[in-house]
Amino acid sequence: MNQHLQAVELSKAYRLLNHGPTVLVSAQYEHEQNVMAAAWACALELVPAKVTVVLDKSTKTRLLIEKSGYFILQVPTLKQLKLVQQLGSISQFNDPEKLSHCETPLFKFE
Image (cartoon, rainbow, N blue to C red; front, side):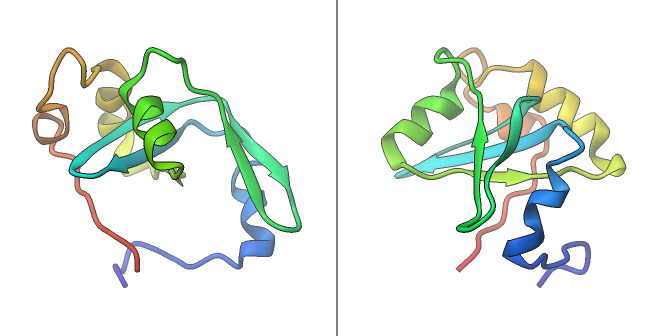
């Protein structure tokens, strides 16, 4: 695992969202991927662990989530401030190469 990532027990993951941070929302459908910044994310249920995120219907990420049924939330670090600002300011509809232009590092989980 990446040295900058730390596993959090699922039953305690809601603690990362309780303080209301801006999060990065990632989604993929087939070969399309996108990442966006979102300010409306929160714990929905503790057992089983569930989260909710509010995304405008005009965003590419929401479209990918609706097609795939999946998304990932990341609580960014201070070192990612510039990346979060870029990902939250550029629409992939306007810039299809958004992820490469923002130099967005992507990785996959099993």
